[in-house]
Image 1 (cartoon, rainbow, N blue to C red):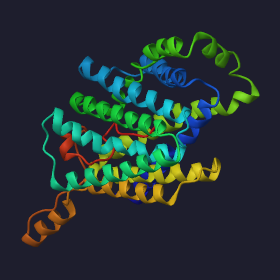
Image 2 (image 1 turned 135 degrees about the vertical axis):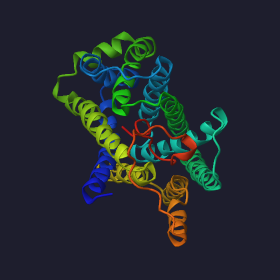
Image 3 (image 1 turned 90 degrees about the vertical axis):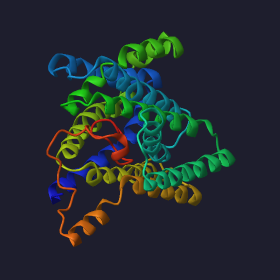
Image 4 (image 1 turned 120 degrees about the vertical axis):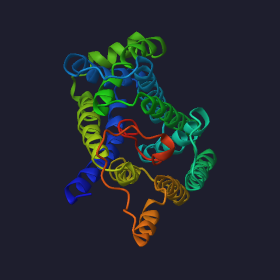
Length: 331
């Protein structure tokens, strides 16, 4: 990976880590379910008008939008609205990686390597530590909701895997067409027309400015710019080269939460978080470097050169526990 592309990967991770602050600001004014509808509605309108529809089966497009777009963000926004700290949310959401691999093994019959199994167990142990500690010191519900968000993300990953888009970015953008209408209906039913109407009527006041900036950041910077750069990198390099940069997202998210919102994380939570990251990183590498070294010693060519075809054609089991080409993002 060139220095320029490595810098872009770090930039995307920073962008996605800061997005948790943007979500926090958005939820200070807009109801959580309506915020999801607003977020994706602002992406869906220009997408339908300007972006060609991806050449994938409709069921996978809907499945991707339902898992990644609806389930993930309904539970994430609900969890953060219920008191989940932004930094801890960015960490717990990494559970989507081991969830993806486990679901791929169960539903798609994809084989897991021993390294992936160990990584999954480590990540689960770390997440269990976070959940146990939270249950002793604070409400457990926000953690459970965020874990459900990670599970929704994982189901979205499987739909994206089955779709095999020729242009991953087009699928990423068209996925946003799925959530707005059902989420708006759900918001009106659960949060009520009065609450939604009040948030819209006061949207252009000075008090609502941080929320508007938060929504704009999420839509333009985190989704369009961040996802676009990530997709470019994933089509240029092997996923095992790019995916580990996603581990910077919770580092940025937790640091930003501490600096801006003065969130404090217990040393036990930090230690558990380190175990989660170690588990995901372990599952993200399948010993390719070691195998390449052995091949070089035997005179065989090394593997791991930049990918030349479209990403998204390998199985979940052969992918790392990190982001997929277009779906495993923290935006």
